[in-house]
Image 1 (cartoon, rainbow, N blue to C red):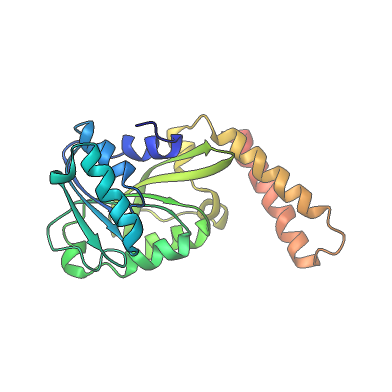
Image 2 (cartoon, rainbow, N blue to C red):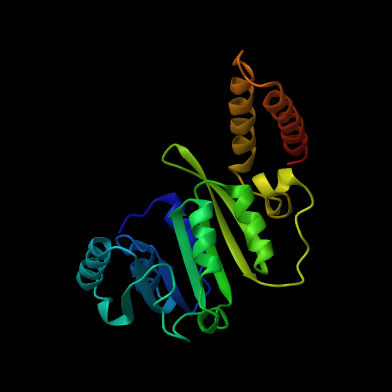
Length: 227
């Protein structure tokens, strides 16, 4: 099975022997491949819609791993039985929706979760704020350029005492990149600077928004110089 760069990155972050819960599993590709490669010990595939769940079941059967996967029609993790998973994967959604899913994890399920692998598509600042507010710390983070877009992929763990982000620019663009290094990060920063500069070219742009963009460009250039 040929996977996208983003899905390969998600699989690379799964701890060996993990019991995974793939939320919004779609066709089940991450779940299936993590089992076929001997990374995950067992898996749960969850989706709020029946059609993608049925497709995931079919794909699991065709790949010979259907007996190792439990399937749940579920809004987030609400229907996941206690103790079924220690690693939660949520990807391919907006940050606010992912945040709502995390906030709504039942306490009895949350107690058994050791790791989160997360790839929000939008609302990154709000999402990182929410992780902190829910006692979840990002340990590793990569920015992936895949099919014409940049995607963050985060590895996080429960930690109420973790150091918080230092500035709003870090909430929006991350900080682990500086500590870990990432080959796509420089291009990502350049892309964001270019996007902001294009917005500055709009003559009708409100003064406050213009000031915010100018400040962001200045901060991003500092980040680029230090990357």
